[in-house]
View 1 (cartoon, rainbow, N blue to C red):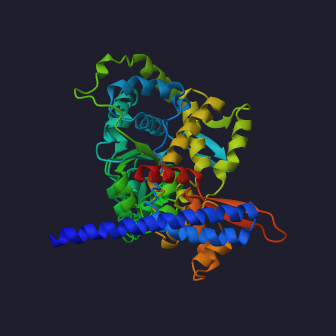
View 2: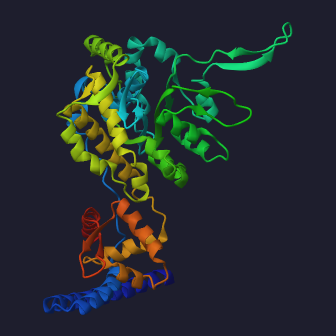
View 3: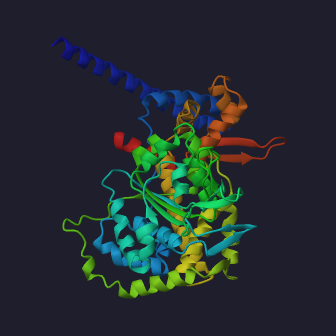
Length: 490
């Protein structure tokens, strides 16, 4: 009975406190309005500071949950890729983006390194590293591969039988499956001469398509000391010679054509992907795609109803064409479109999201090449580029959804909370004063860039007589979500 009385008393005290804070907020808002009408900027800043303290006590927890990626744009279903995905989709619980990326990645690997796009003096081959990310284990990530595998089993049975592997455990293991011939110098006892003797015939087919249903295990492997998987995969994406500089592993691989499809849940990804792998270029060589279960089919799909014959014929023709296509180039009417989007794609962005999307222009180019080759074309038309951009846009939105809340920087969070209750933003000086002058300018800049890179803040620059003035605001998208949250709480 005493506990109940104490609880009632506490509630009563809290109600009085909240009522007092609400009254104080109202009075401050009136004073703030008067100060703005009078144009007294010093008073505005002073009252905003007081108001922010009151609002901090009243404000419910801010919700910075980013929006799930919008539906994949229609342009992504261009050509043969779209025909195949649209035919399979009614009979599969898999997300269409998962079906599409399995198809694009598999096609890019099947055709090998006989087609390429020149970027400066470097050849970019149509090979993709993709990770399918489901919020839960029920995202039907794995079911997206089987119908695609069946198609290529008809078109390229040798590839599906020998060149599709699973299990990413070490760099040496990857190299082994695409290794070159190995010769050793051996003494001929009869002649006394030292000759190069073939001791390993190696792998003639340099194509390797890796499916990793437990990509979380792969990420755990990367954290082990002296593990070579990360540098080997980075070099494989870059088309460099694969080799580990270890005494007990003399094997190497040249001309390897490796593609990867991995599956992981969002929770596992956030737990396992280390800061090192986001910063050293491992993560940005992958395309990350959020997926959901598309529908419920208790009796499975009826794939027997699909007439795959015309699709298989087209796919076979596209594979044969791409294996001898050689260099892929821009169509003349595509160049203006590419020139208009290239600056934004190639612009570096701060923070973890910027690090993971840093190879945007290269990823878009590879996707565009695959769409062109599926159309049996040696030139990238506007339709191919738009299809690639649609896929990239979804991938970029997926990265924002997955990683936007991963900031563990207490300073960034402090600044974010302060901006959330200051609709007119804060200058650098005001931020520094808020923090009590306890942080260096470079440290504050780092936190601000992290917030901006995550899409949580905006910056406006104004010209002055000297150095331009910066004012930082909570991003509009976050402000709208926070207001909706508040309305719900109220």
